[in-house]
Image (cartoon, rainbow, N blue to C red; front, side):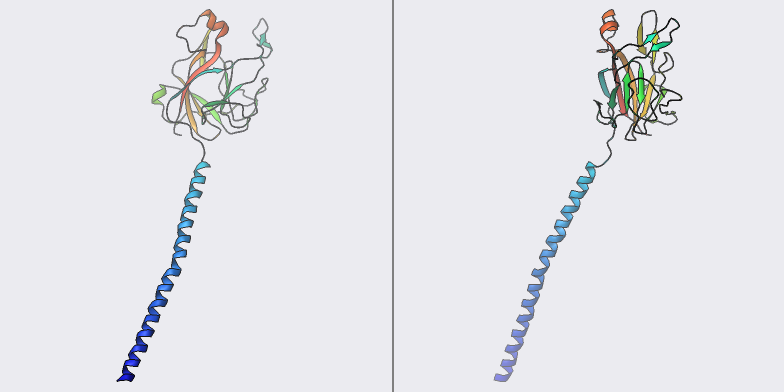
Length: 241
């Protein structure tokens, strides 16, 4: 009987030992769980970093930009036939649609203004004085319509500036974005003319020029003509391709 009880006692000790080993194994797994959780956090951090690397976009909200200067250092001089004998000089004012700001960056700009000329960061220099180098693949075109109703590029033909063909957006009165009234000596945007721009980031924007005079006056006075000329007010927003 004592022998039997002793055997039962040994069996119980063995059982307790097995259970104890099993508990130790479970404890050893927990560091692996912690490691997995850390890896998960690392993955989330990497995704957040990747978000910062995403390409910038043009806001879909309508933005109005006022008083962008498009002045010149010296005026162009012409002969009696109207031919330019001495070109105008001065830096173009560059604009970036993704940031919504004027920029002096040599690469990250979309369009640039000087007097009635609007150039695009795509193609090549046309040969005018003080032109910025084209470093991207931007393009520009002109379409007719109401600003709010244009929601995509669709069939608008976009072009780049070139030495052979000049500015993609013509600078001639009545053929581009503006008309010149020689009787009043006033330059005004042609209603319904909308610029479509492919930006240096590969996005698209629509632009409507609202005024060529400072503070967008309802009536152009002599003071505006003399002191407030060459200040663009325009509105823009991003559109689909």
